[in-house]
Length: 176
Image (cartoon, rainbow, N blue to C red):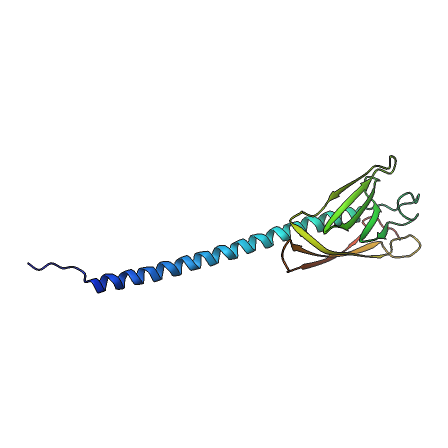
């Protein structure tokens, strides 16, 4: 009686093919996981930028003109400061948005008591490399609607790739 079985060469060839297929699948899986991690990190950065831009845009759009001159120059809606901008927010408080130690921060000052609170707008996970403000029509001595152009660069800490963002915001209340 003759038994059917595999020879040693056939077994070795089949094991080799199996190892090649499995290693290829594992390499593709590792590659896909790395891409997913990079995409998640980019999405986290974009979420942070979206929050930052929305916060700044909302605050500047709702800013009020300082008629008394208690916080910024009388008759102005915005004032450029070193690495930032000052204005009267929709609650009548003095507010400034500025770059400090690699973070965009906001300072809110109760103009009646003089107490100021400073809080970060951006996460500690990121570094803001620059924060530029350009103003137009900020005082009532001109005939243009107040608007601010905000530009900043942001990167993940310990990364060399900087993403750059810019937007222009005009004040909601007409000031012509």
